[in-house]
Length: 311
Length: 182
Image (cartoon, rainbow over all chains, first blue to last red; front, side, top):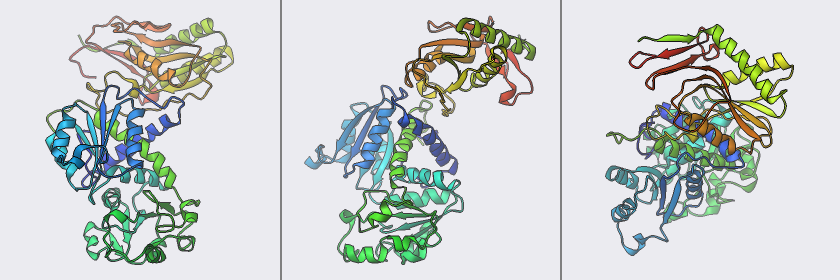
């Protein structure tokens, strides 16, 4: 892989996505060993810079870096000086002065990873920027789908919920379309506005319409922290119209996969019997997450020395 | 100087025959030790040696593969495309002897990486090294226990081992001087 950064899946060619997924398969075996560590990135420093709350993604990147023997260092919103008024660029300059090799950044402002990637020589991995993209999540989702469904071309993926505010959905839409899958989205008009169709997806407003012929049903989290009062009335009403319960799931094939990027609001996006049911692959997503992030760190930090091109 | 063929298919076969006999002579029947081929150069040779050892002694040693990609010391300095191979050790490693198998012994760095990789999977009783070709120019204090052919080379030469399992028409070892194309 010849790129310096991973900022998003928009415009990433299919060969590169396939390379990442294939590499991740090789890394899964390491997590099954007694010594779950290889010396590949010994001496490299990876900074996790999370200006929004996260447990899963930060732990997953942290573990991935440690299993490759990199040193990791964490900055988070609560512990950093940004809540003392420091700008993002100033914080980044300070991190830069400590000579890191890669920064994993999550920030509420879309485009902040892109800004850092342009300004600094180290590798930047976008772990979620506002409502723009969350590429590593989509890659682990695609790996999980590929494990069960094989080639993604021609498969139908339904994404249900607050698609408009979801960086997970956007990265999945870009990546899945590149791999030849068909994406259909469903949610209330406030969360799935008709002009989402410009992304090349089918837009529906009834969950039953999209569940029936889906190979994958991806339920999104209701992001209370991003929603104004106008987006939806109550959790109870939302779950009645857009929640996935066993009755609705029976409309789909018994082979249909149920996914969720986590954390789940049980009883809102899906009922516990669906989340813990036989069609749920939610915990496989988490396991694949570590492998995908090991593959990304390996491919971005471990390849050829960087030349002039910072593509 | 142009490309030469120091070993033909017949030579490769005889060297492997002799290696199989030597390994049995030193380690006894195929129990308590296993042949582990280094991906990709050694994996087919380990299978061929196991076939021969089985034919000679009547029992087949365990075989496996070890991929060293993640244990290389030159990951940052000119690897074309770092692709992962498979490490497969389908036997209890701890307490078992390991005979590492590779096609060419050169700097010794591959063998160092392979030993580190093996150690992360368990504690073998011993590790020995069998190679088809020893071309010299070691950069680490590593020596082979079983050598098919010692080949004097220039540091700038390249040595290629062709095997039919890798899609080549015939077995053989080519010595390619600097400036000649592979």
